[in-house]
Length: 260
Image 1 (cartoon, rainbow, N blue to C red):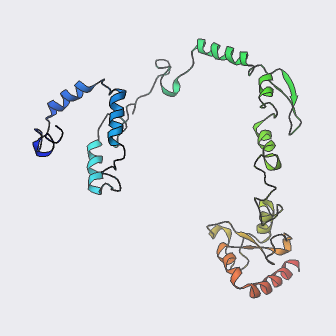
Image 2 (image 1 turned 120 degrees about the vertical axis):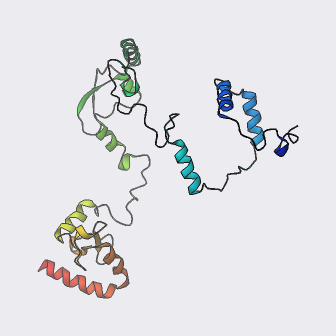
C-alpha cells in the first residue's frame, strides 16, 4: 500500500494544497494529540535511521528566505515580529498576577508562614556563636539540626569551607611551583616600585593588553625577596628564557641602581 501510493503514484504528486484546504486541515487538527501508542510507533519507526539533514548546513539564500518568511509572524517570538506588549504599560492594579507582577495571595502567605513555622525555620530563638568570627547571633532549631546555623553570614560560611577546611583540600598544591607568599599583594608592591613599567623595554601598563608580569631574576620561584623580583611585560618575559646570561648581568646592575 505504501509503495503503491508513493512518488508519482500518489494523487497529490506535483500538486499543492490551497490556502483554504490548509486552513481546514489546521482547524481539523486543533486540540488533537497523538496517543502514546502512536508516539511509540513513530519512535520505533525512526530508530536507527540517520537524518537526511545530518552534516548539512543551510545556505545563505535559504536562511534569508526563512528570515523573510518569519517577519511579521505573530505565532511566538519570531525574527522581526513586534512583541505583544510593545508600547503597552501594564497596570499593576488591573493585572496583579501577570508575569513578574505575580504575588502570593493573603491565604497563600498564611499557609507558607504556617508551614515554615511548623518546620522550625522561621522561629529564630536560639542564641549561638559564629564558628568563624565568634559573633553572637540568633538562629532556628531546624537550621542547627540541618547544619546550616553555624555561621552568622554568607562571608563567614565561605571562609569556613575554604582552604584546609574544604573537603577538596589537597595540602595547598594549587599555587605550585610558587609559594603562598607570592600573591597579588606582593606583585602589586613590585609593580608600584617599578612605576608600573617594564624594566627592559620601558612600556607602561596602559599600553599593555595584559597585566605586567613579576619575574624572578634567579629563576628560583621560591625566592620571593623583593630584590629578586622585577616587573616585565608579557613580550619581554617570554624573551628572558632565551638570553639568561645577558639578562642576569642586566638585572644585577639594575638591582645596584635600585639599592643605590
